[in-house]
Amino acid sequence: EDGTALGHDREVVRAAVREDGTALEYASSELRADKSIVMDAVRTGATGAWPGAWLGLASEALRGDSEVVLAAGTRYVARALSYATDAVKEDRAVVLVAVRMDGMALRYAAGSIKGDREVVLEAVRQSGQALQYATGSLRADRAVAFEAVRQDGDALRWAGAVIKADKDVALAAVRKEGRTLEFVAEALQADREVVLAAVDQAQARAQATFRSTLALIASAGATGTVLSASATLRAHLRQVLLYARDRLFEDDAFVLAAHEHAKAIWTTPANDLQDMRERLRLLKELV
Image (cartoon, rainbow, N blue to C red; front, top):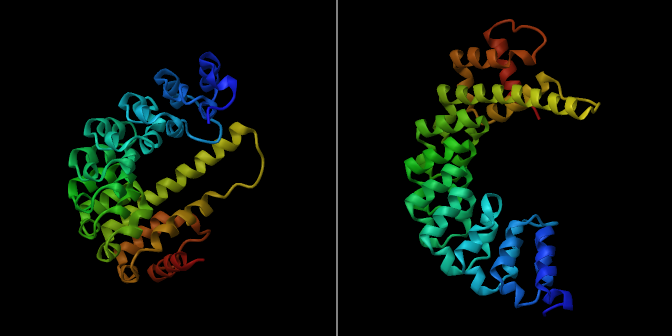
């Protein structure tokens, strides 16, 4: 369908897509094959969708044009690549540029590209979560996994079992995101150094979260109930301790160190080491 008469008017369509890329839907088939108009559409803000999605309305020739695909830019290149032709998705040079803009563009690359170590390394350096789209062999590649968790600790969830049992990788992950303790190997969930690193990160994140919440409320001039600093800390620490193995709570050095991180939660000091131990266990088991 070529749509209304306005859909055939080049200048009307150009003005429309520069305002809202979704207007390409109403352009004639001839104008959907016009490179400059389609490039304007994929670059432009759209109502209810990402601009890159409107590449799907372009002619097949333009969906196979790497310049058009990459015109979507850093924010939208992944979506644009999803509408590109197979030839573009198989083009290593194009995908390499795309993942450097948005690592998650790896999702739409051809299978052979997802097994290309250099491309995957570039993708996970930009977005650790891109690891989930790499081939199994690369998700089990220590260097690739290291780059992914350094960018996003949570990316450890996509790594191979051997990587999750690698203490150095696990430490890098939990130092970036304490909750990643959920995904490390069971033996490391009972490792004092790994769990305390996760606890330390959780405490820091809780403090940052509380401060940013207060700042946001103050800047907006809003009023209302704010989760207290101790409640924020409790929530963050529990997300870590939930995955710490029970036998670790018998380790006195761990109990002393973890309790020190959590002391702001309680209004009274602990009576002794056993009291600290029970408090931490209660925090772990709290629903």
